[in-house]
Image 1 (tube, rainbow over the protein chains, first blue to last red):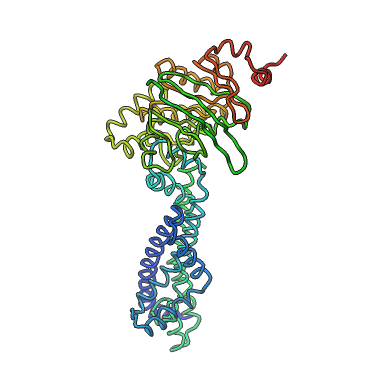
Image 2 (image 1 turned 180 degrees about the vertical axis):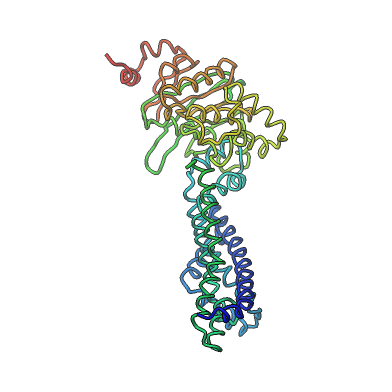
Length: 219
Length: 246
C-alpha cells in the first residue's frame, strides 16, 4: 500500500464524506419527520391516512433503496417531475427511513402499558396531551436502540447514492479505482471513512441508550 | 342534592360476558364507601365506569350532576372532578415525583408552575415525602409511589377519589403507611370510593359497605360494624369467612 497515493486521495475523500454526511443528515431528518407523522397517524387511528401509511410502509420496506432511487431519479422526470440528484438522494433516504422509523416508533408505542394512558386520562388530560406528554416520550426512549440501528442502516445505505452519480464515498472510490487502479488504497480509505462516519453514531447511540434506559428503568 | 355520584341501572358487558348488571348506587358528599367482594366480581370495572375509562352498555352515571360519557367532549372536565389511584401506582416513569404531580395542574388546569409546585410540596409534606420531590419513581418504594400517586390525584382538587385496590401490590409493612394516608383523607371529609381486600381497614374507614358478587350488589349497609360481625346475606357470610382462620 502506497502512503503517498493515500495522501493525494485524502482531499477527494474528505469532500465525499462531507457530501455523504450532508445528504445523510437531511435524509435522516426527513425520515424522523415521516416516522413521527406515521406513528401519530397509527396511534390515533386516523381512518383513511392509516391505510395509506400501511401501504407506504409495506412498499418502502419491501423494495431496495436502489430501486426506489432509480424510480425517483429516472422515472419521475418522465412524468415531468424533475429534481436534482442531491434532492433525489435525500428524498429516497427520507422515504425508506420514514418507513423504518414509523415501524420502530410504533413498536415503542405499543410497548407502553395501556394503563399508563388511563392514569393520564384519569387526571383530566386530553388524548393529545396523553400522547405528547406521557406516551411518546416513553415510547421514544424504548425505541432508541431501534432508532440508532436505523440511523446506522440509513448512513450505510447512502452508498447507493453512487448509482445516481452523486460523488459520495462509494462513487469516489469506484471512480478512482477505475481511473488509476489503486484498488487497495482506495478500498482501505473507503472502509476507514465509513468507520469515521459511523463509529461515532454507534458510540453516541450506546451512550444515549444507556442514559435513556437508566432514566426509565434504573438499570 | 348532595349526591355527588349517582349510578342508575348501570349495565356493563365485555362481549357476551355480563360483568355488571343493573347497579344502582349513590354516594353523598363526604361519604366513604368501601366496595368489597371476591375477585372478578366487577368491583374494579365498576370504578372504571365511574370516570369513563370503561364505556357502559346501559344505564347512566352522574358525577356532580353531569353524565359521564367516554366519547363526549365534557369527559375531560368531568374526570378532573374524579381522582383515581391505581393498584400499580401508574406514576409516569420518565418524570420525577414533582413533575408527575404538577403536570396535570399545569397542562389541564393551566395553573402556573410556581403555584403548582408550592401546593405539590405542601401535599408531599403531608404524606412525608417532600424530600423525595426530585426522585424518579423507580427510586421509591411501593408505598412511597402510592402516596405520590395519591398526591397527584389530590392536587387536582377532585370532588371524589376512587381507590382501586391500592394496597394489593404492596409489601405488608408498606400497606400501613398508605392506608394511614387514606384514613387522614377520610377524616378531613373527602368523598371516597374504595375497592379493597383489607377488611380491618374497611371496617375502620367505611361509612358504608357495598358487597359485590357476580356483577351485582348483594348487600349494602351503613351498619359497618354489624356487617363484619353478622352480614345478612349468605354470600357475604361465605366471603368474610375466607378471611378468618379458625
